[in-house]
Length: 168
Image (cartoon, rainbow, N blue to C red):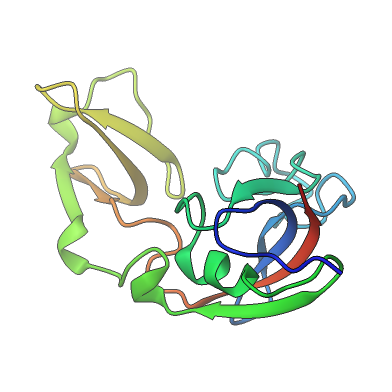
């Protein structure tokens, strides 16, 4: 039986979960919205970048090319097709620790009148140098809008169940 080694191109199935069991990433075929947090009244439950809706089928990568989390690529070494492992990635190695300095206010008067931010909304800000910054709206008042530029999973330890499907 073949065993995966560094440099091998492989296909894997993954299921990423948070400590509370919430699935945030998956390559497994599922019902359209089974891994999303949905609200019967919501029309945009699957618009989040962290939602796995509509994405299914094994992921392909080359072990050691840093195409995915290093811990997962390292765990694949020595695995045989069909074998599964669970890898826990601490927050600092996943999406970083939550940084309060990445939460900031923008005066409501500095926001164009045709933009109506709502708590939970994700926005992309463009600076003078055309660099973009993705933020989430965390508070809206008449005077200011509070934005958070931390990754949505910052501060979260994450786990991935990984199955080696095939060595190509």
